[in-house]
Image 1: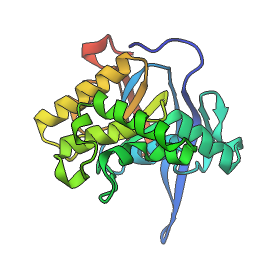
Image 2: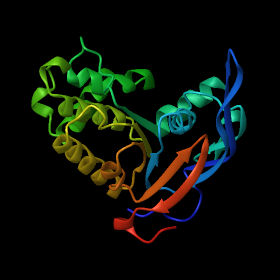
Image 3: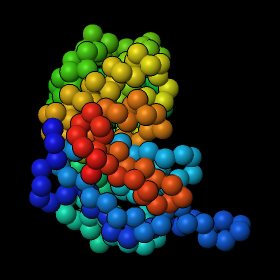
Image 4: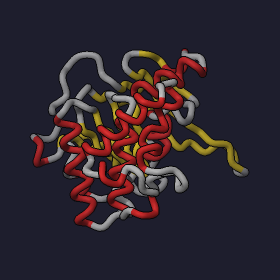
Length: 239
């Protein structure tokens, strides 16, 4: 689904992040400007140390910028109290990580339902929603299984189901295919494509060109700055 023009779901202006090291301040991100419209599918690329992971942590409100502004669905996150920020993050963003981050002693249904516990949903609502999403990713039959009993690709499907449980408008995925073989990676990217066509905005970090080709737009970082921002050839002309 193409992005619709209007208020961006993400807008950053002059975004910077520095870390204090033994040698002094290290600028990991240097005055980044970027807008992402609702319904876009954006791949964030760049070599190790380019700033892409720092940028994603800031987008996910997992870290705070040293300078600049970040507007998430029109709200400047720098002006929010911690409780307001937590609510906005939990209602707006679903996270998918390279390492799946499933709790090993919890069955798949309870792993998927976990964000609803923090949202205060009752047990029956949590169970029903988790079952629906496990069915969506083709794993309803494994609802009572532990993560160790399924493959890596299946675990990532569970992680995607968990990311969807609060019905977010935005999914942030950090190297979601990094631990998977090429065939399984294609299956996961096809699932992301389905979700995007349903209107969910997806921002995905990857260092693999074939994975980035599934996105409609590729943004490349180098030395803490954006050096390229263009439409993926298969999805349209360069921006």
